[in-house]
Length: 432
Image 1 (cartoon, rainbow, N blue to C red):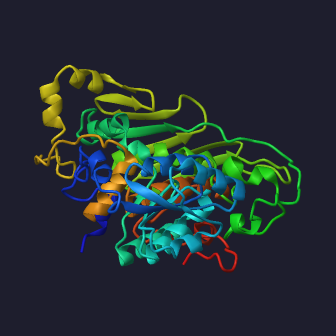
Image 2: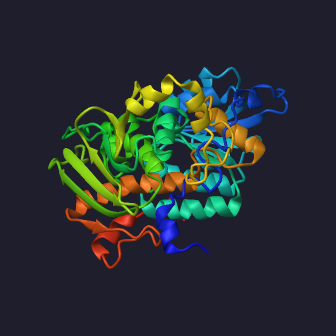
């Protein structure tokens, strides 16, 4: 059994001896694409607006879309028309999970549905690709981790920046000490949307409003609660802290390779009935067990800045910069040797294979389903990184510094803060 010190000094999301790239297969595109039409996996898609359709279309390269589901009739009918086949069409995802032709499930619903759908899919014997963020609360993540372990299903979370060469390279450079000892990480996410009050109306006939709400409190229908703008309501999401945070904070957490033990948060909150209720202005600060400080801001240049004792690296979706990047860019032999490190044994580097960036995140999922191994954005790692996002929101709500025990996953002796680890859930939609 590992000691508490060992637990605190190693993040759950990079297992010993596997490093950042041990699950990577550079030839990943061929895995699903070369399978015959009769042997390709059957894909069921749940939630098909926006990113749900994007991911499902990508999944079509590796499997056959055999069923689609959405609580909005217009969305599911349009989605079915997007595929070159005639999949079954469902309103209730539980009917889709009964379909024996469905081997894997793609989930692109609003955040408050992710945990329950992943749990139900795993228990139905399906492997799952779920959009980020993984959970609505920290307690959901604890249940999810247990269920995935019990069922042995393959679950990939759509935090696709882990598969992008810029972000992977930045993490590799930091973990290998190319900027010296890491001291601080600064993340900028952007502002939350503000708006309201909005008009209450009857739900449109094409939308099953009861199913859309799921575990959340039953409320009158407001058009701005659903579809894309659900993310600006704390009942269904966590604002930018979980929306962009599930990308950028995830990468920061991956590089820090430890667990947070102290959190501070500040925020101002809107005071409007029937309007967006995410923070108007927000910031958070985390102290990790290894001494690294992570700050999160809602203003500035979107991206992640790593600062060490010997340099800095900045990364976002358009750029990767810093002296360490420039130095190795002109020395391919040095860079190649560097990329062979075992990141969990930097004092005695081990050659574990070239850490190529994955061809694509969805492809990694299908590769791992076939090979029966953990994907890059696995459940435990993503539970731990999205927990960092939730911790920031909790600190903002409480309005004072908090102490976190990452091993027990609780605030020691702090009933008020611990009350935010879960939420009330409507009957028949509980996450358990």
